[in-house]
Length: 489
Image (cartoon, rainbow, N blue to C red; front, top):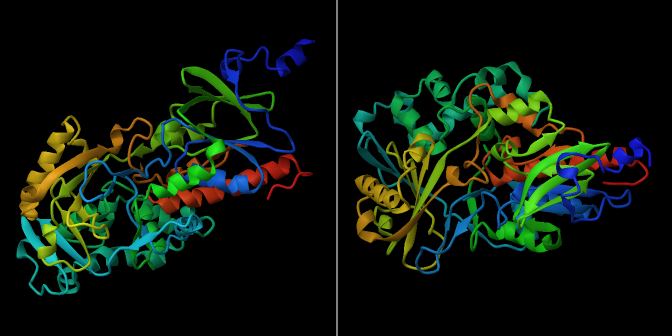
């Protein structure tokens, strides 16, 4: 064998193509191309589902021992068989892809009751917003005239809606490059609200509701535009993790858990994915590789040759948002005595930015309150033991929701920044970073990039499914060009 053929056979390869790495899957063929998907979050599972329907050979490598990524239901700490959500919680009625998969797997939906009683606690002043309360807002809030006259619901909508016409449709080609989008991308969410004349209290309310103090205003307004016709929310009956679990049951033969990818290497027009599983170094040869992992996790994979500089810079630039959810099991739903119309929600300028009644559609007398902290508020809880986080949450909640401590039975705390397989709750695109989102989504020959962080609906299950829809199209187009005689559609 001459040297050229020797190299082509891979016998002088370096890195993960060495003989020490065990090949555990059959090599791809022109008759059945092999797609390797890294990550079994929603975007990876949906991509595998759609590619399998097209007759392609799919392998999913998931580093952890579970599927679902940031869709995670907890069942262990609650009463009356109830459960809480550490991750994705609500499903808007206009998130069509999410709903279509739920229906495809015959999962049941619970409609969150219409009407909403919202408790606001700002500047140590407490106000319950519902139809029955006609009291004036606290004067210490110093709301401006429009905010005071139109109400707090108006604050949540109008500061977004007034820029919808100027920003245009985020689905339009070249949208990110338009002058108005670039202008809004240069402003943080907080700076944008100030530019619109919002009062300090209104800004604090919006930050408690939406989060993302330093995030790009363009991204938040774009999300508001896409969801402007949303009217109500759903949850999956039995817990939102039933959706990724349903995918996994149908993809069982394609799914490998506990497989941590370490390297993606291209040699002589061949692509190898190398990973560690059960203490062994293993590899797969692939025609295409789909990445369904966060930017933080992409930084842990070695690429040979290296990714282009713009892609490397984009991956390095985006941070994942710190977020902590504290779920509190209550012996009864004492907050319903406020009174409450529909689902109960509270927002505050304490470290507990929001509180949600997660038991509103669950059976039993007991209830669950979910307290949410992000960014600096979440980071302030780091270093505290879980029980200390729970006790601090109860002490703070008691300030604006008396009865919390008296009704508390037990709880749990979960911080996304502590999960080394994801690094945070969602990608944070700060001022000027909107083009980074586009770069993260850009394919690199036979490497394709999915995940909600590559969608305008960043942070939503719908964003994950939209990204899956995109990369399935990109992958099949690539394979059709590579093998024009074999139809891949």
